[in-house]
Image 1 (cartoon, rainbow, N blue to C red):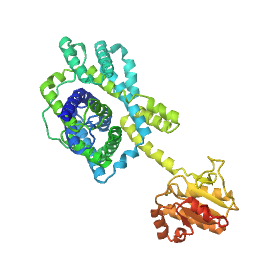
Image 2: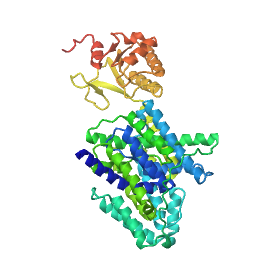
Image 3: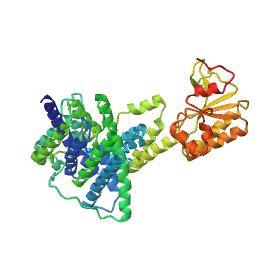
Image 4: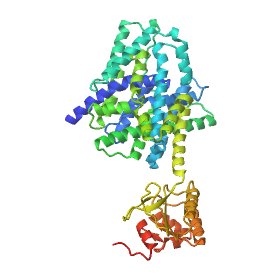
Length: 540
């Protein structure tokens, strides 16, 4: 009973947060608010049935709403119901991408978007979303990319609606104050206050827009009328939408699981998010993911099991069913304030400053942030994904072969360049590629190895430690065999150390079984080193 009571209280608290957030995120996506409500209800229930995180809340997120808006904007000829059909089909396709990846056990997909790139993308997206809320608050028309929105904001300064500005500022201030008291459902309190204010102030008469009617009547999804090329474009944009959504969701799910000692599986979460998005799209809803703010609020509210998500879905349905007409009266500046408040965690520059302090990946994160702000959400997203891949290829494709030396009288061998006190024998060269060898870096790595061998021409034995390579592709095998033939021609013996079983099998199939014989292949660098010094008694 205690557990059920905790989940009920947490679910109701989350429902109070999600209703204003969902309506606000619908405005970001350019969709009527009911589509965010449908998505929240479906996402919460489906994830609770399939997912494994006790705290994750699968609902519309600000980032997925912005990306969805960018996807639809890529079809400028579409209008009205056709634009909505495109949006819902993008959600369905993203759900199918999740499901295919989950059944194929591609949970490592989240790793294709590195954390620095994701942080930069999130920061740039947060700046973009926050700036685009300002026209809503001050009651002006401004569209296009971030620069044009900023220009329009200042150019139309004289046309700012002061009532809308005051409403938005007061709502945001209230949200910021209530953030200090996690037990208070700040967004819900502001929602109620905003609705109450509409009975005292005729906002539309003063030029302040309100949310508008929430039509909860269910309708069957319709296929958009697209040509073959347009369908291809829709699929191409839905795939990165799924990738970014999973990277964001998995980061939230994993961090919450680690905090509470819970075990979660990336492939299972792919299936859960895939089903949630598939059914959300079929219900004419927006994309859903495990957003940071809602999931953290669920945790802070004391949720114990996934039942809290189901309670939240029921709470949203009841609240909209009973008070949907009241929610429709909510002033849009209040919704904009809710969006800005929800984005504040992503605007925190500390994660980016930390990269500068570490002197690691700061330029990659900065480039991702600038790409979103300069190129727009969709192009910035694609740039961020490409940047992750390029950064990964650059790191593993930059060959570095370390020249090893013995650390004192121990059996440990270290990079002699970093440890000048290490000992090196003039008759033995010990080399270790710092990255796994494959077609992208094999020739460059062995090129470096040849240069290091040339600098010590009197050496009789070259030991190659392959501890970083779990396997060798055909290019790496050919390069290794060519390196061995070159050394043999120079009168040097190549021996291998720490060769993995798959790489050993590859050498034998490639006709280089002599390199895998016991007198040429050793389990440790120490054994290979001792074998290269036959005149020295092995240490006991």
